[in-house]
Image 1 (cartoon, rainbow, N blue to C red):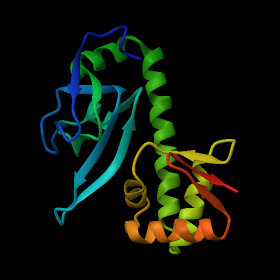
Image 2 (image 1 turned 135 degrees about the vertical axis):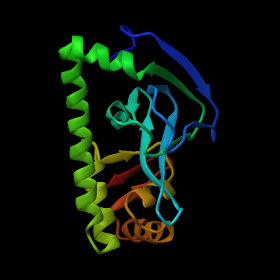
Image 3 (image 1 turned 90 degrees about the vertical axis):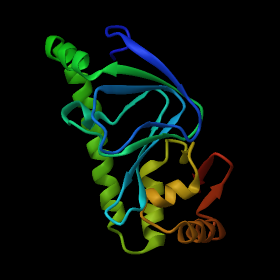
Image 4 (image 1 turned 90 degrees about the horizontal axis):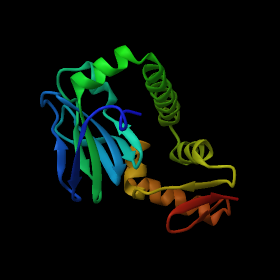
Amino acid sequence: MFKNNIQYQILNLKKGECLFHQGANIERLFFLEKGRIKLVRDTIEGQPLVIHIAYSQETFAEASLFSDEYHCNAICDNLSTILSFSKDEVLAYLKSHPKYAIELLKINAQQVRDLRLLNEIKSINSAYDRVWAFLLSEVNQESKLYFSYSLKDMAQKLGLAHETFYRTLKILEQEGRIIREAQFIKLV
């Protein structure tokens, strides 16, 4: 969206490197050209909580546009190329180009819908029903859920212990409701 219209810096980060820290002042906004970034918030108890995973060709930490400090840490999950934009320049550009402001609003509205659905799914008490509802909500037209992050991260996204998540997937597999492959799960 901004790549052709606003100057940016290119950052190449390795797995485990931190792009920004929770509580740091916000001066830059980011677009993930390629790779994967985990947004991790430190909870009140001091435990890390993955709140979002950004994939290639996505913006991330968009709330930073209207905040003074980052509300999470951004940690590279694999080799990543990131475009870094000045927050002030992005805001000025959006003010003078409403078409792009509308595009950004559409992206953010979809993210809000996705988060609300995830919250609804996380409110399901039964791990079995929660996992099944999540799979139903995430599969494509071929009834496949492709994922480029670990099952452990998927469990955390659903608010389940990874052992519970693995057990539930095993039960669904034994019942013939899913087929597990290396990079996808297919509903049968």
